[in-house]
Image 1 (cartoon, rainbow, N blue to C red):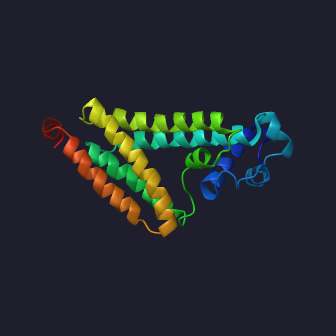
Image 2: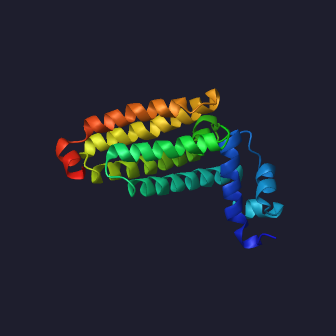
Image 3: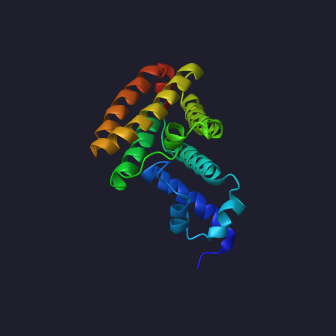
Length: 201
């Protein structure tokens, strides 16, 4: 039997999975309890802010994982183009592996939250996406890009992957990821100074 002490963590993970599969509105606290196996009485003990707080923490957990994936991908490559190829490839493989059933853990909060939830949710979404963009830009600089182009490219990568998650799911095809990858890889090559490219070849 799962220990009561890890109920909070299991609830966050379950909420994140459900939001990625169903969206924010279609994810109920009862669904989270069922999937996590957490005791019913633990909901407002761990999350006094209710569903909004739980969903916000799930989104932050998703962003934390994505930052980790960006770091891992950066450790495998020697160019900005290579980082894009690995990161977009991971997103594509995750979508295909889920049977086109699992999207982003952050976007549903941004698009579905009502006015009474908008302030907290908007801030959560801003922090989460900013963390991902900042880390991607940081690695692009380390891989030879100047700061301004690195930030521009990082914005494009995160926006491109977010869009591909939606369209690939709708089309049940990896084609949107392939299109995003081709465009971003070409942009990365164009933005990489020739001196940086020579040093890494």
